[in-house]
Image (cartoon, rainbow, N blue to C red; front, side):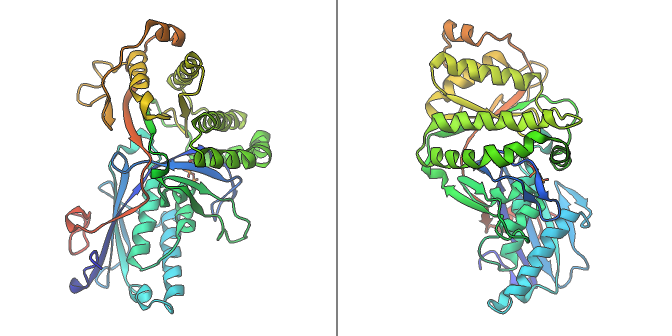
Length: 402
Ligand code: DP6
């Protein structure tokens, strides 16, 4: 293997893994320990050209203990979710030892893990999903474990299991007691729908909201709506969404995406005490999208929000210039806030389009400078990748942070 360096007595692997944004939301566990969901979910994996996590893992008989560095800072390895992932990988390596001798090779060694996001964690962009997917992918490669390991990523963070594949990915609920069948599966590769685009509007947020783990616990405990949702709404939605993706039917895709985001936030309001993730800017973006769609007499853009105020818009390539122009018009960068950074990052910001007065009138919002910090223009992309160039590793040849 090109990415292994057995000569130095140390094995090392570097991987990158993507962010994913759900169009059918995961919210609620039926088993906290194993991270088993109360409903299936479905997401789009975003291109790693714009957003990704990068992790290097190394194993050596010289390491005295397992150690982890995250975004430049050493972390405690005792964190339960980290322990779960490490433990599960080692358990699987032990099990596979009979089949593939190499899988058991490193079982006596401690590991060093170094991980980074190429985007600010503070932006609240599903960093745990990319991070755990990357950790599990890197460890699996290090220990020569082949095949699906999404059930391990799931135990790091539920949504992380969907970042183990590219394109359009579903996370099945599973029925087994041990969760072995609660796994991620690709519905279609990214290339299946090349016109699909994604705009992430990073909204100026105040203090950090309730974390997803804690938030969904309270929801499951107190909300009757979330139970109804899991039993009577999501199952058929999941099917309809899968069909819409296979048929590249943007009307259905967009409608279900918005309705499912709204229902997720409705279950948050139905939580007692209630949880609010959307802020005023989020709500203005929701209005903008609906008025924009009404103006055109069809769904041209669809919003979705996770456990925070940032908006993710799904749309088709041809409509990007118009939607970007609208966002710039109603949420222009404020002069104080944004001097350093480009307002639109990622894929090219196609030539500014003149907005007809009629369209501006239909949207009918007051422009609100500075309430959107910046926008990331991206698309669907591939699952985790192995990087073979040692220059791209986060650990040096002895296995220590560079
Ligand atoms: C709103 O995967 O972060 O983004 O399993 O407790 O780590 P844990 O939760 P997490 O929850 C993500 C919730 C969501 C919806 C989604 O991505 O499906």
